[in-house]
Image (cartoon, rainbow, N blue to C red):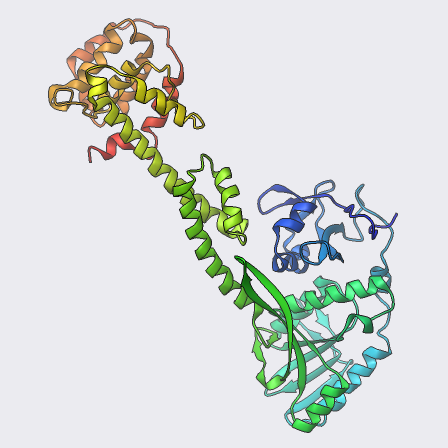
Length: 492
């Protein structure tokens, strides 16, 4: 069975485990949630970082892709196993791209190599060290690679690699790392159009992807060299290449990229950490992401005040349309902090409203429970323990024990926090909630005074075993004393 068909998108590995978050990731989610540069990073780094593993066999997997104009990024991405792994989800038939691996470089590769060498030999400042003969080694890992051409220019050693067919992103990255560790640079030269690679459709698909893999490993840049450019180089006395680079722009609150090109002498390129680039697409995209992140955070903050989402999940759903570039890895903690800060402010405001209600004339003179019932309905989605059937006399006394004054006479000066405790020892309807009274004594900023007061110690000494009544008032008490803490902040 083939692992790919032009009429189906059945992935070899439908679900992987993300070891960074320990969550399951479907291949559908991978294609939808990850941006192009993120997918490129996974392709280049997953075997080394071992982040994504097959859900079935737990082995590290490779992110592959096939051309698909209907997919979000122009390619459909999917995971596959490394050749040495045996797994129920693995398809064993090799693809045509795998068959091409190991095939010796063809005539066009040789012709382009000679064209570059002949051109450099006619330019001042360039010295060719070797043509497809010298191995170079990493000083750190002792791994080696043999560049197509090895040359020096302006005191810099440059490895020129010609890539006309598909190549493993891991091998692309490995070559970059070897030259970077040698404090040298790598210049990738690719062919200039899909039609020049092969008459075979699958090879053409891999060829287009290798363009992306090379560019993403080189700050979004790759290069083309032709006979016309060779003639222009000799005429101007400078090595001129066509730089093909990914240029990002903001469009409809999202970053859109396009491939652009310009003929440029190597003298005008930037040499940095093993890379040679004309435009630092990675840096430009980071700048645009920061701009969109700032705009997204402002839009998210506005949503908090206009929509009042009742959960963080709902908040994320609201944020997605106004912040399309929201990155779950980078932005989730910042968004959660924003939601928590707003939610805490709303909780603190609610706690203050509860205190004001028990301080109000409607409760003090008429014991009107209308406000409480309306509030219970409004916050029913939250587990605050605020229920329309709550015994408000219990709530009032607990607030007093915590040290919060409710009137001119119900305050600390009149020992209201102590007298409130008496109800839970003396009144039949209050006794089942004595456990809340004791908890509030300990939590109260006046707890020591309460516990040492003779009217309390004598009651504790005489108390008998009771049947504890546990209901929503337990949850209300837990919520009311939790952060953001109202009763202590009022008395600071």
